[in-house]
Length: 361
Ligand code: GDD
Ligand code: MG
Image (tube, rainbow, N blue to C red; front, side):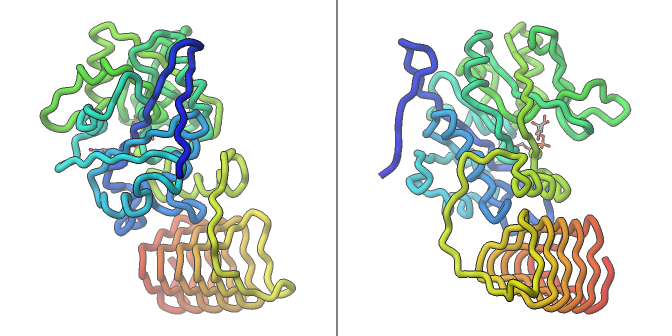
């Protein structure tokens, strides 16, 4: 059984809004983590990433979700299936080659009705999406773009808007010396169906670089909704770590946390120190003298005597030998970290990496 309900935003007018998630990127900047797991399902706090988006979408009353896939699609469909276990209806579109952000929505054209909520499949936020949709309707916008003020806007798309929120200019990833503002495209849009008329069927096309700027030039009503809520993308290992901290610190408000049945972790309580922020998935063996602070461990890790793990993420099946020190690092699945190894801030190890005893990275 699944929950499927219609909701109405305007009294008297019933909307059945669908969400479309862009989940076809290669995750190139998240290598080596996204080599064997596509970015939309990398484990974040031990949960496949898209789970957090699905929950946020459901919270807005939307239960029909389309995933636009291109890279390693089977790994994604195997997890979400028809959506039943997640309380949604999940459908998929497949691109034979990456069609770009706008091309991907165009490829899903026959599944799209009137208004669509579109999300980049790598942004973590507790923004109230229902409020975004209401704002969009209130402005009678053709497109609404969720924006966020950030400290370091370089590497993002900049969105410039007037005092009324109407967008006047897009600058997609300008060089650092041409960054003119601090308000970025947060990768979440509400789009009227008419937007699809601005996307051609041929070749790859990008909302950010082509479709939005040309709509603006043609006088379309594009609005910016600036969120003050938690927002973080997972586009690079550093950002992935930030998003992890957002979750385990509680700064990112979760609508719910999935219950998993896991084997118990094993350690002697008086002999290890694990702080309240840290999450261990299950089946982990933690030996005496281990200290774990502000970190996430996947299932079946084995952490030996005297190891320190701080501000780090360790994926499942990894073994860390005695007295290793791991700080602000990410370690993939089934790695072997030798005795006395030191992983300093910023280390990122792909799956099955083996690090020789006493190495310093
Ligand atoms: N289906 C499909 N097909 N999805 C795609 C394709 C494609 O050809 N290309 C990219 N995507 C998906 C990615 O998987 C990701 O979820 C989303 O579209 C955005 O692509 P990224 O590659 O992650 O873009 P970005 O992070 O460099 O920039 C975008 O996000 C920023 C916010 O995080 C832009 O929208 C920026 O303007 C924005 O600031
Ligand atoms: Mg991204």
